[in-house]
Amino acid sequence: MTRVTVFDYGAGNLHSLVKALEAGGATVVLERDAAALGTATAIVLPGVGAFAPAAAARARGLDVVRASVDRGTPVLGICLGLQLLAESSDEGAGAGLGVMAGRVERLEAARVPQIGWNAIESPRDPLLASAQLDEAYYANSYVVRPTRPEQVVAWSTHEHDRFAAVMRVGRTVGVQFHPEKSSRAGLSFVRAWVEEAAA
Amino acid sequence: MLTRRVLVCLDVRDGRVVKGARFVELRDIGDPAALAEHYEAEGADEIVFLDVSASADGRGTLLDTVRQTSERLFIPLTVGGGVRSVDDVGRALRAGADKVAINSAAVARPELLTESAAQFGRQCVVASIDARREGAAWLVWTHGARTRTELDAVAWAQECVARGAGEILLTSIDRDGARTGYDLALTRAVADTVPVPVIASGGAGTPSHLVSAIQAGGADAVLVAGIVHDGVHRVATCKDALRAAGMRVRAAA
Image 1 (cartoon, rainbow over the protein chains, first blue to last red):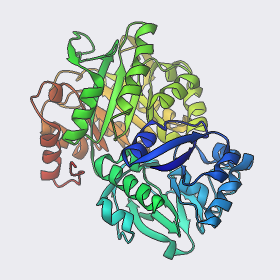
Image 2 (image 1 turned 180 degrees about the vertical axis):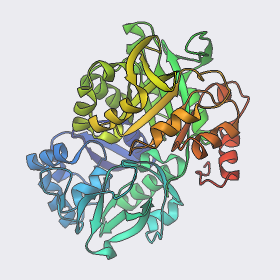
Image 3 (image 1 turned 180 degrees about the horizontal axis):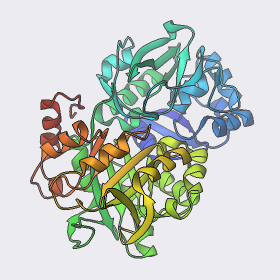
């Protein structure tokens, strides 16, 4: 069993994520103390809430995740979790972890937030291939504007705004969508990540 | 490009799904968690629980129902009905809701939308608006469409967005349960003036009504209840109709 630690910064719904990880073969630990994440063997930064409260949580110790990344610990950031892995955000005060090169900016579209199912374009990551994730569920107003496009392994487009759907740096993966809300293909993606984390 | 969404609404009373025509005449449909799972398998893009419980006890039951449902549901779940405070929003989210629909409480105190968005992000704040035609306009009604307000529905939708709502769930009281089609003029009036997704609700009788709500009404998403609960139409046939009209819809897994 792969033991996966989910950072619980108290903002919202973690039920589906926990169930999705368990369905993917993981044993899940919810951790409210960011400092304790440093000893985790695999980490999920979940995707609920707004950037500023989450960045404040970071100030209380989420920096340890940066050290985990540098040691090669598998990390999955979801939605806001991906944004925390970037360098900084327009949404609120506080800096990101700087694993992904880029800044978090508001979507440029007539309808924001982007809410609904969107196509995964130009996928080039084994996780996406094995999950056959063609469409995924999004609920976001902000996206990462990558400065190193080679870190982007899939894209999506809201109206005319193309943005990073999935980013990867080594064993750190960030997804702007919600795999735990993307029905069967989303569950397959989570399972593939759990299996990669165990390898 | 986003797909067009078909949302299935479950009216939940004391832990059971009921469906009222014109907000009355409740009758039992079934177990919410099992029905939600069934509709996910049929290709529903989201599930909406609207709590129509009469008592506080019933509302407590709803959070248990949300918890049971989120054990097995892997598409988004919106919960509404009786949400009065930021704490209520937090409780619903922690029980497993992804979004919370706020209706009467937002009319009573619009700051609730702002506070909820600041705490949890506007993507999880849905302004639920029940509107009834009066002359050339539509007025907002609250408390399960029993209480008339002086608010113009279109102006109120704009204020909700300005206050922090990330989505509008727009129900025509006139059409609710009538199965004569969505109120296209109402839907168009709101969709053209707010910069967030609009979900058309109330009046679906046939899959072609869903097509009209999007094409003529300008809705981003459509909500169905009675027509799928009764088995008159299936979620899949609803989505087939959208696809046949040239729209992108998500293929059911």
